[in-house]
Length: 171
Image (cartoon, rainbow, N blue to C red; front, side, top):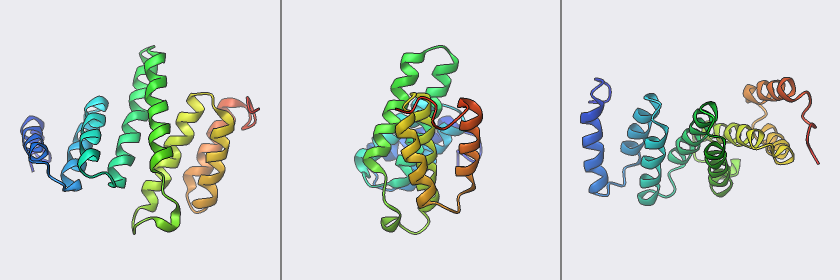
């Protein structure tokens, strides 16, 4: 309620209290993470996600929000000419997705969009890390597992315009 009213400090106080009580309700953490993301507080969102995942380790949506925040933090650092720190964010996102990605047949109802979002983050981060062979493998996997996702074609087109070819730099 406080978050919807724009009273972020009050909302944070209540979220902190729930965390101290070791709440295992993933929805509370998701609201908190989404609040931090809405304020573009990437490091706070990542921190909350890390805390939440210690208490609710299998919360797929929390993982998805964490890797989104890592990707965005990387871009913010990259724009600020902090390339080494940006690379660390993208590497962490890639590693988290690699550990957490679920195959489509094991996904809970409604989790397909989260899965597709994580593929998008993986492809973007691998591209920014200049790991083109891996990027292409994940892009193919994303397309195979989510043939109805229009974002795949959009991302392919973007990468071709950006790099000149999907094969550029692939060994």
